[in-house]
Image (tube, rainbow, N blue to C red):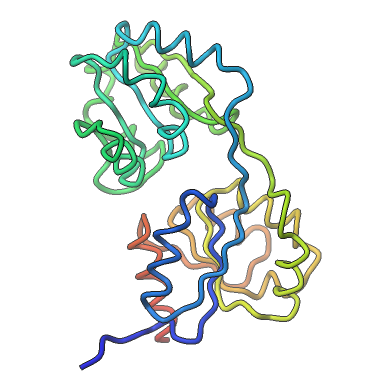
Length: 255
């Protein structure tokens, strides 16, 4: 008996950065759907390499190295591997980032079993105040972003350094094609993985009424809340990771 294809005939927009979109797109196709790639974030190396070089040279001083995304792993880890030491605990915000670390050879990684955001990471016992007080932590991330993680760790007594290793920007290509397809109602659903992506989506296509009718799928409550506040009619919270998004898409398609 053939396996069910719940997304047969459905066109799903994948908005992740192009380097991270492949597995989700493949999963959509495996369920019978069409994956339309429109990365809402362009990811480029941080223009100043000096902060990363300094952090690499001082890596032996740190107890924890936190990577906030797979992009942070991709842009920071090659410069760090020669300085990695046994006492340094790699930390990932979620399973996807942990997978990127493992693929690069860092298999001893601490990450939340549920969730993939700062709140989930801060809930781990290893980062409670009585265990983290006095520890030195380096966080590899993009230029800008949420300050909750570092602020909370500092409040709990840790010594924290931020190192920007990549820069995010709005997509520079494909806007007209995407808006044309959206206006023609070619899409059945759209996936989002960050609040920043939602912001760029509205900047690019917010003038089109069809945008607000398309079902939005996201694995974070923060994105869901912002999408609802922006006026999207159908907003669906899924479990985290590719598996969570695919399960949410499949379940919705059956209804």
